[in-house]
Image (tube, rainbow, N blue to C red; front, side, top):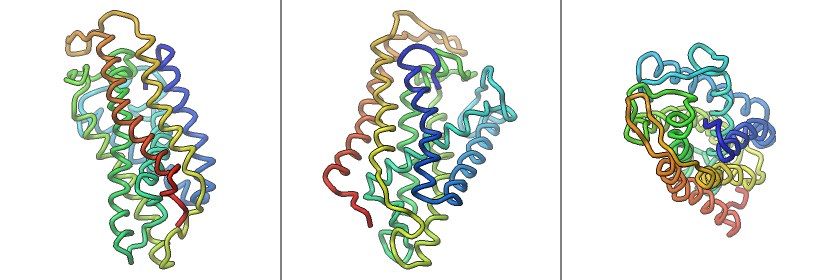
Length: 267
């Protein structure tokens, strides 16, 4: 993720804070076993596909990380960031779908729908964030390098398709694991402890708001990506902020509106 500039520092700080937050909130909501399952599944799946893409180009594209201590080819902090960001994305999507993680009973039509809709939406919510920051992290700050560049300010569109696919996979696994006890118990909410969804949504909102400070603190200049294309920094950060406003921030505000309106009362 971006590591330079005031706005970027805010994003990094929020991402790192999502990790302990997800641990505390996740244990309370799902219990130790299911929390650890989510952590392990998100870490293993993300690390596997990150390494696979670095070696083969699938599913994200051709890139490599710079610096940092690595697990194989991937910095060790990337997996926990997938977990922390994934957790707040999961619960933001669950809020949009009226606490869908508590309604996964396969004996009911809503439960069957939620079991697949929730992972798909969670992956889209998480990918929205990546669309709004990847160009800053790679093209500007060189935390990783896209070897062939790409049309999204030096990032290929395949990166975002890959992000949706990889995050969907670990969200889907977790949804199926949650659906089993709910279906066996024959009632919604089994294996899930109702609690506040406000905090994870606010965390997600914060990651979007940071793009505004990044834009405001932008210095004039240009940057050249690995393919030799020159990009204007002001235009790059303005575009990333605009994307964030009409994706991350809009989704978070919609989730907050549903909470305020009472659409997310416990099952």
